[in-house]
Image (cartoon, rainbow, N blue to C red; front, top):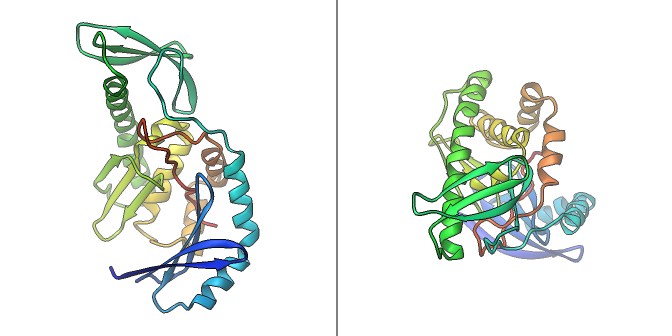
Length: 252
């Protein structure tokens, strides 16, 4: 797909404009600082982009303010007692040594027990936790995707999980294929379910058109509440040293 990228100044905002072979113009606001990005059809002029941004300035400012006020979690050092999130719940990390296979388990509703080799450095401890995260999110997504694909009336597409810089999920309707951000393992289950339904519906309607919103409302009437809860989750880093967070993922 052919793309063109440039920057515009609109109402005191620096706006990244990406033109590509799409039908509709989309305005997005990205954390952590509220970067503004416009995806526009190739034929749309700069003046039309400016008008679209000006028309959404109130919404953009609200999203930027929300990001600034949102709780943030610094890069994890993988030390005893620090906080880690799993399915929307905060857990305290407990470190233990083992001569066997490194593993992770929940200790009640408050602690995450990580067994690692004696003397294991922080990257090795993180690798153990990341592997556990991957297993948990796969076990959760597999039946959820099958259930919602049947409810929506589409064939369950191939899907993968990976760390993603700016999105909770993505859909390639042509392949078809879905991608989900591994960071979803940190948010509540109902928020994960919202992302699954959102991406599956893109197999039917690729854009955030009125038809897409109608379908989303029909299949998940409380999607807006779930999205609000998703966006209220603490901004956590993807990998141990990456200060990244997904964007708001929803029609507007």
